[in-house]
Length: 85
Image (cartoon, rainbow, N blue to C red; front, side):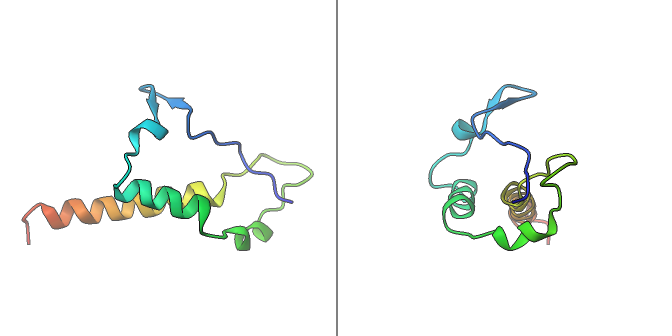
């Protein structure tokens, strides 16, 4: 089984932001977080990781997916709402 870096959604970073309290129910980010954590099976990516016996723990594919999709969709919503067509 691949080893991943441990993640803790209740951890604080840089500006003491708690992600569990920052992602509000009813928002796109909250929905994305729920779907990735509870509905998507990202184990299809696990065979790509070969760090079971050594090497540095990798970032969990779920975290990478949430980050990439969240930033992509956020940038898209901002550009669509800016009124610059």
